[in-house]
Image (cartoon, rainbow, N blue to C red; front, top):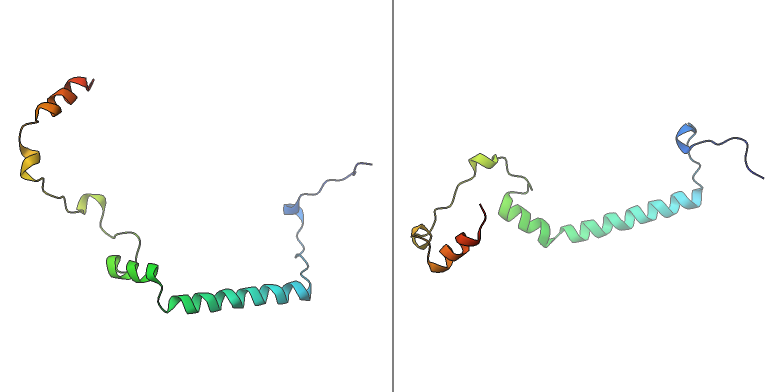
Length: 93
């Protein structure tokens, strides 16, 4: 027998019932995760490297145009060598 009425989860406004056992289990898991992070945070190599290299932020405050451009070495400034000319001949641009 098929149901007469279909109700989507988003249409239900009542809070989901969580049993006391589920609440205790979730609280214990959260406490264990917090303890793990606290003990890991004492000497986390990832965080330490981020702080040392980038001051603790993942994105630079400088824009892409403000980034210092590296100077080309002398050997790159010379005329292309024989292999370079052959490669250029193959390039359709």
